[in-house]
Length: 278
Image 1 (cartoon, rainbow, N blue to C red):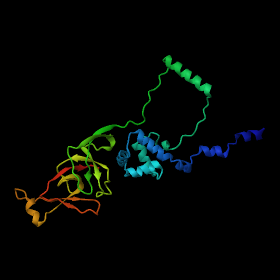
Image 2: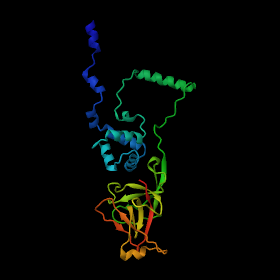
Image 3: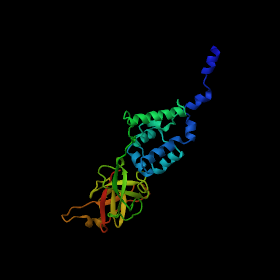
Image 4: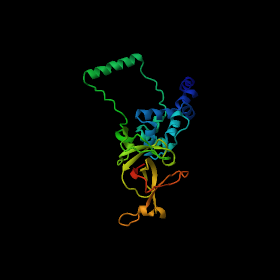
């Protein structure tokens, strides 16, 4: 009798393994990547918008790298995964990325039918009111003006002040004092700013040396770091104000060393359009 009881209490090794988390199996099935994509899309975020949002949580990563996560070609590290949970408002945290174990129902078909009838009876008599479904995460959105023409981070392209479109973004990724956004075109501000990235701009007319800004110069729009230098002797007279004060010559500097600084000529139109906030 004791032998029979012991035999009945034995659980097969396969049943135990099926209940354990299997990292290899989960990786092969791209569980984490698919769940990142599902949560991102549920929050209405494009790859670009998600990239911007993650930057607020200390994760500097581009659209292509996020796409590699979602397709299973790479995986986020532990800190990035925690940041993803915060950014997407995943209340379950890391548990969201593990498959839920299959639970065997204690009710057969007839039992579920009786349960449904009992629930309907409670609702009809007013003794039970189902709770309204609520979203785990409610992301607030804000409409921002985005320039339809990019600011060049390589060669100059015209920046049209009146050419804007309204685009909705998660409020968390837009700085409080941003007046508009503009897309980067080119690679001269790598590695800080990338082609097609949206940068947020605060309108202003002056910048301090070292600040990054949006500039309109000689018919082109530029995203560059602002610097100043004393003008050369042959152009010095053009930088002297009416009261005899020598003004510094603006210089537009690229982060990418393969691009030479642009010395702003006193004979061409130049205007500071704003300060880059991100």
